[in-house]
Each structure stands twice: as C-alpha cells, then as structure tokens.
Image 1 (cartoon, rainbow, N blue to C red):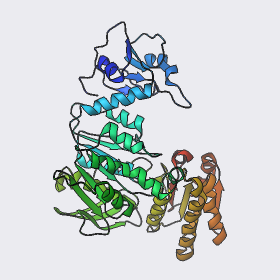
Image 2: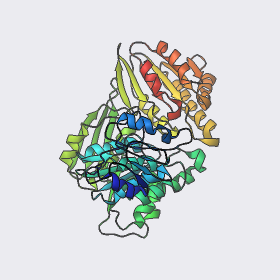
Image 3: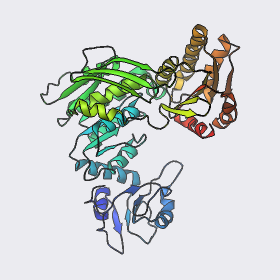
Image 4: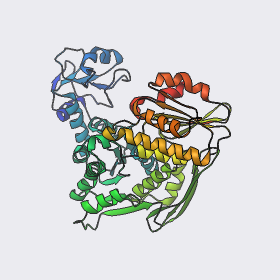
Length: 470
C-alpha cells in the first residue's frame, strides 16, 4: 500500500469504529484476508462468505503477527481493531479510496475468454512498477484487493474485470474507473446465466458504455475480428468524437489494423508459439513457450493496449521474451520420457476449448494424444448441446485425420463428449469418470513415451490437482 496509509486512515476509508489501547497512527503495508497466508505486520480483514466466516479467526490473525484487524465482531483482542458493519463493503471502500489517489494510467480488461492471459501480458509489456490483478481477482472483492497492492512507485494499474450477471462490469467500472479498456471477445462463457449470446453482449458492453460516458477515459483496444465486440464499440461510441480519445485496432484477418498478426504457427514437437506481427513502427518476429494459437490473439491484444500509452516497439520486443503463460493456462510442461503436458486446467468454455483443440491438431506427437477434458460449467440449458458439439468436433477430427488418441472426460455433461466419440469411433479408447480423484487413478497409466497430454476443464472440476499426480 501507499507509505502514507496508516491504520487510522484505513478506519476513515472503511467507515469503521476504532478500538485500540496502543494508538492507530502506525503505517499499513498490506491487507490480508486469509490467516493461513498472513505475514507478520499485515492487517487482517475478516471476510464473511456463504461457507466461511473470517471473524472466527481473529485470534489466529493475532498469533500469526497481524498488527491490526478489520472485522464485524465486538470481540476484544490485544491489537488495534476497526469494527465495521460489513467487511466486504469496507474492503471495497478501501479499494475505491486507493484508486482515488492513484494518478497513473488504469487499464480495464474483460471478455468471455483470454482476459486473464491478456491482462498478464499487458502488465509485462508495460514494464516495471506495474500492478495487475493477481490470478483471477476480477470481482468486487478481487479488484479491491488489487488496489491494496498499489505502492508509491506504481506507474501502471491493470485490472481484470469479470462478471456472472448483468450490471457487474458496470459497477466495477464505476468504482474503479478504468481509463483504457478492452473486451477481448464475446463468446459463450456464462451463457446459461445470461440467456444467450445477446445477453453476454449486453453484459460485456458495459465496459464500452462506461468508457464512452466517462470524460476521463482515454482509449480502447479493439478486436477487429469479433463482430460482437465491434458492434458493442459502435453502439457505445456512436455519439462520441473526442480528440484526446485513442483507438488501436488489432486483427489476424485485416492487414490494415494497427496491430496485425501476419502469421502464427506452433512448433509441431515443442508446442512453442511462433509469431510475426506487423505494426506501424515495424515487424515483430518471436517464438514463445506458450501453447495455443489463440494466445497469439491475446498477444496482439496486449500490444494494442500498451500502444494506447505509446510504449515503444523496441521495449515491446524486449519484454515479449518475459511473457509466460499464467499458471494452468497454456503451460507447457516437459515430463521424463519425452512426454509433454499442456496444462489448461484452470478453466474451460466451448469457444476456448474448441480453439485449443484446433491448435492441438497442429502438433505431431511421437506417441499419442491423451486428452483429459473436464465439464464446462455455467452453460445452463445449453450445456448438453455444447458438450455434444465438442464431441462432434473430436469425432470429425478422428474420422478425417486418424490421430492416435485416448480420451478421458471428467464430471457431468462432459460424458456427452465421450458418448459422441463412442458413437462414431467405438474402437477409440474413451472413458468417462465423475471425479478428479478417479481421473488421478487412471490417467497416469495411459501416458507413454512421446505422448502429448492435454488437460482442460472448468475451475470447479479441479483438474489442476491432476498435475501433481503426473
């Protein structure tokens, strides 16, 4: 946090009542919401959720070395305390207050797929003294916690903004006020909750609606290949004509875009991504240890975003080498026996999964493909059909190209994928299980020398647990 922030200032920001026998003018360097990871000198903020209550762990926070707590309870403790009516609202108020005193550029990124990876890439390309949302800190609590990481020397702030329903992105924008924005794409994630593609469009468009209405906003990085995103931009900005507002377009189809992906391919043995990118300042040619041609779109999106603040091309080229996939999002892991694991276990949705499978088809394993596909959640009434569509895609690939493949599907409607394979290719080894624990029992025995193992599923399926077994 800023060096000027004291416990007393936190109380003012949180709107709470202070209880202290030792004074409240001491500086605060960090706020923790988990006693298991709390470090000595942190302030502990006790959050309450549906299945937990952080107010029950005040003593644990004291024992771990907290110098103060923010909580909802009247319990007496030996260190200074700020009592609030609602700890989450207090955290959000602290985040808003920290945002109000930050003077550097603020970037907001949302989208159905790719927003976390793009956010990480933007942070790398902006350079040192950049704070970005850790992991997927993309809701009110997460973005508020991100603001608590801003320090005196922070130059740039990159915020990931997610949503599960209408109004959530609008609220995030209103509270944390991005100046530069991007919708990576408008796909089918959360389609079950929002009632179809039109609903997702309306929810994601809230980012552009805010930027169009806010006189302090400064620019948009626009995906020139996504018709829904283009329509969202045209609709939101149809009455805007501000001289100081910048637009940077990026595309893999239109060579007139500001950032044009001239070519991309993956090394068929290593899976490394090779890129040639055309910009007004010159071309970028690079190879990165990131799986998936969809990551090429994330990279040109990130370049377009940082060009809104005129980061020089030479700095972009230098910093591209520092880009690595986020954990469980396209990591390429080498195992013994020339086995390769492609780890996309963090999350899954139909568009992202099909894109990854298209990339996977372009590899050439010496052995076989071993696909571990978890259920895609939050698809509502569309779930069965969308899983069947993935099964049909795989059945078509197997029928046309005859790859050596073994498939394991995990949990719920992912069985529809297995059913489609069995229907058209009964000789292909396919198995469905209902838990990750069951997958951990059978997948290791399927893997042999030279195989490429691909793992992808929605977060709640927990396929990341499979990695430690492998």
